[in-house]
Length: 170
Image 1 (cartoon, one colour):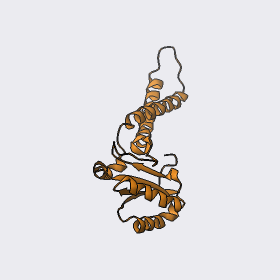
Image 2: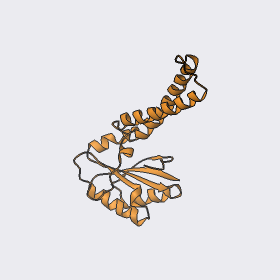
Image 3: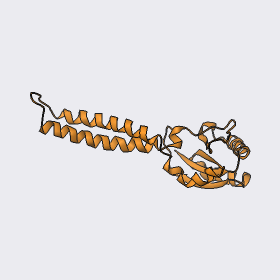
Image 4: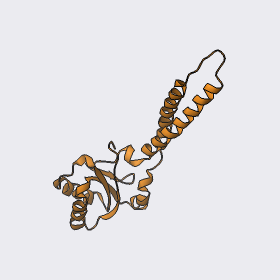
């Protein structure tokens, strides 16, 4: 299991040096993500993906639940008040629940892709001031080691929160 650590650094050079130190500490480059204000060049740094910048995952989860519930209700209504000449069975509820869940997840993820990630709200001010946010996914047993490494090698870095777990795919 991995945990996501957040750090803010003042500039690209500092971020690049921190990436180098993390690589030497055997943190894979794919587990180091950088987010900066528009217009700040991230020369060679691994920029955060849309899944990390937006609330897509949260939106998809919400849409899945709401769409599933709406599908179940639609299936129940369809069974209680069937269209003329159609014999609907209980499997209708399952089919409408799955269809509603899929549609809800798709629609809400499209909407949520334009909403900034709510977990990054505490870093918005620093990013707007030109600082660079670094998200580092580390094995849970190495959290303290990596924090000590960053504190000793990068006094300019501000340590932030730590997520208890991170999603497997972003």
